[in-house]
Length: 640
Image (cartoon, rainbow, N blue to C red):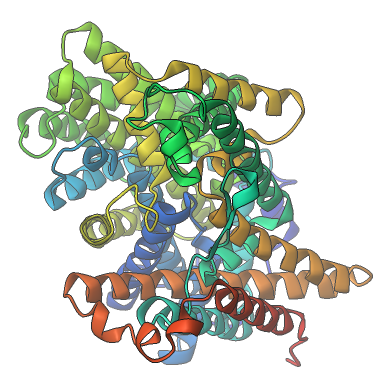
């Protein structure tokens, strides 16, 4: 394949979709689904799926896989196999996006099964992933031509276009891959020294005794520095602001007024005077945070409602013009109908594995179709990173739980059915967004939608096993909801379903959190980042803030040179993505060591340098050195 210049200006609009000439024209025939593209696509999907599973359960966020995986795929094909087939590369990055989307869909809610005290089997996670993933891919097919071709230039799909730019710019593979690998190696080594060797602590905490024992801490982790750099200073400061309100306003106030009360106040089982700041946060503040997060998700849905209604109407009308499409373009529409029937039957007749019942199966398919359509269009406006999946999941869970309760399916069985059904919906919505993003990239570069759809489902099946295994391993080793693995969204979903079914939630605290969320909305402050900071421990938000500050410093250094600033920022984001992946993957390896009872043998820090390894200031100093090295690497101009 001969070298071509970058994308034409018509890739961004200016012509009708049917008149757009893709980067690879129809007359050029290149292989797409090959052994290399499928094998490496599965590998990269598993890597990003596992990394995002660990990161999401730890921090409550995931990182986009499109651009990093496009760079990795380009480098693998060109560097190892001496191939320059952009269509094979597109297959790999599309499959990687499925690993990321599936991880995001699963971690939001499926761990709530464990939080509610039920057994979660690997087969259940795999089936939920496959059923939800199948719906997510299939429900985009009837509306693909409308959203991606007919709406060309109107729906930008910003992350799809960025991925397409990387794919067509072969030079991005070399330096981009190098920066990604630098971050991955650096994040991995840092994690192994801190998490396995325990040469310094990962979460130093300082107790402020004069202020009612309030805590301040910071997670000295490479992944959080990377996340902070990727999301930027605005999101990082909103998160930290929420953490400040929780730890330096709510906790001291509860302690101040509760110290003289000699009765236990629900939901705690201890007197407030006997509780530490951490116990107060766990017993009371987390419900305020959960109320804020739930309200934030619902606010995002309410604000998106005009878009949702418009998207649903126009997408359904677009199905009519899509009815006579060639089978060579997409999987046939009969697959959509057959897949829906398959999901319904599987959800209904497999009570020991899925167990939604016939009503749950119907509700799951209806909600999945609605939110898949909504998700596929919303990512065209704001990208997958900003897709309000949590809000869609909360809305689905409230609707499904309410219907099940009204029809007499209550108690543990009702809660489990609601969680499993909403998990299928959550996966479908997340996968639909990732699927639409990849299909837009495919349209721009000239790939075959049908082949991409097949490859994406293969990635769903392959990564579901690993993602499920990672969830269960982290649960067995650390416990979901623990300090090591907070699983914030899943805990919140468990509280919501319990509250609807039993009516025993501390509604005063939840409503107080919702009020704070509405206050943020009225003040023009993004609700979800603030609410997440309110819900999560302050040490997580503090770690993310450091990454945000580093990005500000990089931007300040090159503020007078916009072109150079763009180059260095891209370098920083790719390196930060590597930091997150390296930290997460080594974190999974350390969890495996812990499961095999080998963690104590590796923990040499407390044995050889107990004072240094146990000092909070050692952790702070090492984090400062690491952040400085990351900054210097990012601002260094590459001579290539």
